[in-house]
Length: 244
Image (cartoon, rainbow, N blue to C red; front, side, top):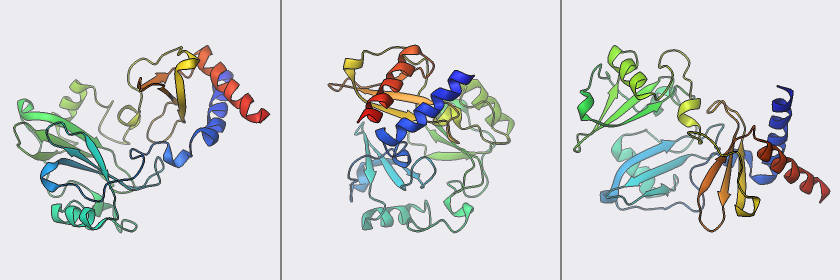
């Protein structure tokens, strides 16, 4: 336990040197688009400012595998598009009430035929909406439906999918919001590492997460925070910085 506690302290210290803590969980990096052709948009996700990212982020998924784009929340196009969709009453300013940012309005469905479900999104209760919201995207362009989190169907469906440990009570967001899924690597060759990101345990993920970006576009890997390699690599990084 002692070594784990010391490691977390080391990790938190290194965050200051690696990246600004507020920006570490931001989904959007670099300049955001002011305009995207509406006909290209398949889905829009709005992430309000939070403890994991100080910026309001608006991400659109494009049709036909066109990837994702970040929209500038302050652009005229973004404001008009969001208003037209009736997603939230406004983009600017502090949310006036928790209800105004909720995605689900009106009664939610207790049951949806599982064969019709293409995708499920679970939004835990937060400062922007006091309700747990569960939204399913239906197949064949059938649109979206909000599911009642308290219905027997919803609980059984979510448990069967292994998405979160439970729906009722305090939302355990660690399973959904953690960036690292599956086993993490114990060792990565240091020469391959281009950048290291350390995400301390937080309200959105109860685990310390360490992610390295590999050189030459080789992608990202999650490192096991408890492995000897990880501890030594981070300690070496701290010693280098303190020597400067």
